[in-house]
Amino acid sequence: MMEANFLSTDTQWMSQGSKSPDTTPFFDAGITGFGQVVAVSDSGLDTGSCYFKDFNKEMGATLKLDGSYFPTNRKIVQYIPRSDDADVPSGHGTHVVGIIAGHSNMKGIHHGDGVAKDAKIAFMDLSRPPRSNVIRIPPPDAMFQVGSETGAKIHSASWGKRTVNFAYDGMERSIDQFLHSNPEYILISAVGNSGKDQSILAPASAKNTLSVGASNGISGIAPFSSKGPTPDGRTKPDVLAPGTKILSAAAHSFGFNCGAIAKSGTSMSAAVVSGLAALTRQYFMDGYYPTGNKDMKNSMVPAGSLIKAVLMNGAQQFEGFFKKYDNTQNFGLVDLSESLPLKGHNSFHAKMFSHKTIGDKEMHEYLITINKAEGCDVSQLRATLVWMDPGGMEGCTSKCLMNDLDLSIMERSSRLTYFPNGLRGKDQVNTAERVVISNVEDKKGFLVRVKAGNLMTDVQHYSLVITGCISEVTPPKTGMRSIHASHIQDPISPIVVVVVVVVC
Image 1: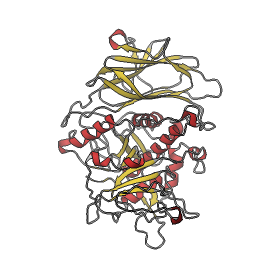
Image 2: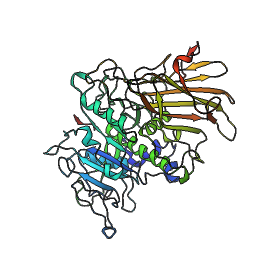
Image 3: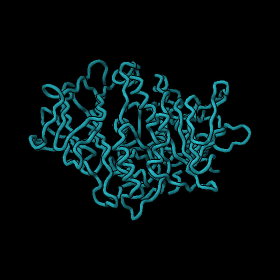
Image 4: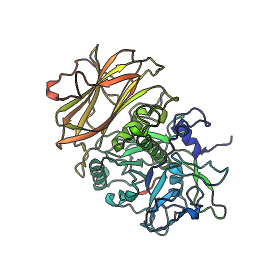
């Protein structure tokens, strides 16, 4: 039996939640990554590939491989040659960038086009001479400088290293602290390809990274995808994305430089999610929220924690013998159609809260009313809380969490409380929490609660996403209230929520 490869264009429709290769609803709505720059650190990049090359020199398009910024370039706006200025023979970086934002300028050749095909790239070359799959890992401050002139707030890292003594190390701490202090940023990283328990590589193992494992298309989990938990017990990966036999841009295609090659790995999966992050960021900046139609009057700059919350909230867990919220799939397979309302494509409503501030021992409450009129046929109520925690204690192997926030949903009439991440109580370890309630009844009222349990800092910022057939999301009485947690008594009857080598 012949085996088929997934085209890079297959990742477009699969990750957009379409059931058909001929349908890309977010592209059709004009959400293609336009206006977004994704920063990438990897083994190198073949800038001569048709998926990245600028063809019209009369427009002033050029590229100097010296870290200079060229905002008018079609695709690559910056190339920082930290090691050299070419890709390694395997073409790892070229393949990854092709999945994120490749877009061929050759008529009739688009099978390698990327998830955010109209996004641009700022690139840092990490390969070590002579060019090989061993890379030079940059310090976090240098890594996040990639694309800083270009406005890049998304960084894609399809590489990783094992931490010393399997403990939270200085690199993870620095990354967490940077993301805590720079709320617009998001780091997306591949978890690794060992397929073993407790094998998550850094920086995917950091608290604030959006860590990505691999699926076999939309049919199951790839056996090579590394598994958690982290040393302090956090559940990883965060989400899954297609990562097997993905056809994307090839490096060093001599002569007709429009070649493509199939590769498998969580590197490919992280690239898919990085492309989706660019689409999500464009969605907010172009004013698609809250109506699902473009309206620049609604334009907003989303926090990195909001982008992470959106993608994790809509992720779909594999059923059958796969466990939910485990260290293999955790929140599940990314699905943009279940993450963002899009007029004419899906029917659910969403309320998004970006970079909200909560103080120690405070509680924020959001009142939800279910309304299945006007064509909404969604049976679930979902809420996802994400915060960028401060850097933890270097070397910690028990609990590295500094600021503990807790998400819960109370059904108002029965006073039953639903806890996150498949637990019977609070999650005191992770920085992302999701509650999914199935088969919600029309007209029911729910109370979504975000509680600050024990903060090591004065305040903590968070983002919250709520989706379903919701007609309103308002606080009880007037204005959003902050309540001292000691003044609130939880319902008595809790119930289980239903429901350093390049990574290649």
